[in-house]
Image (cartoon, rainbow, N blue to C red):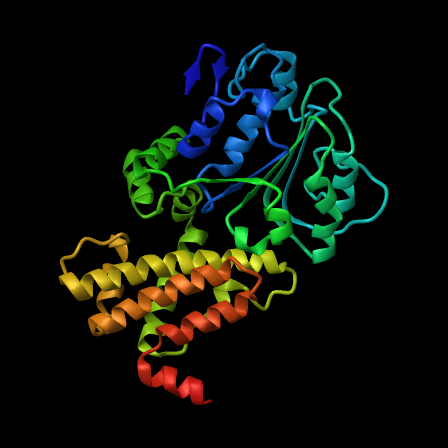
Length: 352
């Protein structure tokens, strides 16, 4: 997107673009929550919005930056004093220390940062990407600042699991959804990154609108996770023992939020596998598939009656809903496995 008042370079994000495009700076809320699947541009849009607000070129609307003013140069160098960013799980933290541009902000760090006004800008922007809170105490420590931050402070949260956030926090933000990207947009981003067009097209076609997933498909290690997820689905549908080790649910070095992230990825891939399996069962072996590279595996999954197909698809949807709440990752995986199992195995599990 390019306008008379500067550049605003993003892919997709139509709802957010429409919302902010006509918004003048005086009508900004104190906080926004960007939700949607991983890899659809939530953090990119948040950073572009932050740069727009810190750009020192005059403009009447919120979006747009010139890229050459002092504010933009400081932002691009990662040294702007009025931009604070963090990603991942936030802990309660200890007293003391500084939070500026720290990748491991604590709640107490953020309380200090949210208490400050802009140094060289009318705005002070705090971005918490892929946000999760280690404990309720860590979340509650920030609640009063989310309710009434100082004037000029803007907080942006991004998450692919909004249901995992406390409702008391979520309700304090204006929530904007980010939809999956068109495959053509994903392909264009990959080609711009230097990926050969043929490989970029293949990755985009199976990425379900996520640049992150498309890049993962091109990564051999991540491709192994994708293959393992489809194999997990096939084993569960046959009632066989499933290998869940690739989810690292027993790894104590991972936080609950990180484990939920792995399970969320599994469920997204299982959703694709279930959709393709249903398509083959209802339309035949030549039905077009979302994951065409997994056709041979899908063909080996036993067919079921239409009513049972609907139940499988519903179970995946319910697991996806549960994964976005505070239900433990292990319980979500167990629930999905039992619901996918053939009926005799589900009855046996219920009587165990």
